[in-house]
Amino acid sequence: MSAGVSTSQKPENMKRNRTRSIVPYEDTRVMLHPHKNNPTGYINASNVQVWCGLMPFYFEVPMGERILRYVVAQAPLRESIEDFWQMVWECGAQIIVMLCELDESKSSLAPCYWPLKTKSKMRLTDFTLTLNSTTSSKHQITSILSIKCLASGEKRAIYHLRFLDWRTGSIPESEDALLGRH
Image (cartoon, rainbow, N blue to C red):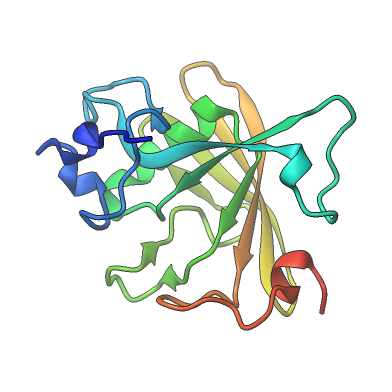
């Protein structure tokens, strides 16, 4: 199978890629509704489908479901935070799993793309995010956010799971953190 990556290589989209070599294929990329700041609707993210017969035993799949669908995306860049939340909204995502370090020094790591203080808000062009609660464990921080679409007034809950054992340029020493075993 050979799929192109032409949309990711357009000059107006290059600023939305963390690197030139990690980009989505045309046939699986997430396509956002275009808007003024993103006329091509491009985001560095891919739709993934996994047949449940291949899932490890520790995943519970509802009866009748045969395919799990999810989105894999790079950590948003400062310039793509609005696009990231548009993707979360348009895809109907309910859970965000963060597998990289948070950038608190304003360098090239993942910028903070959600509010960090309970009951605080982050206002974007089309959405408002509110941090409702946060719980911490040895391996992760779980935050419950609400996202409100300013055009419709509709609100949704989002669970944000931030894994602390996944450092930039490496992988965790054990799968225990990801599987909730301590």
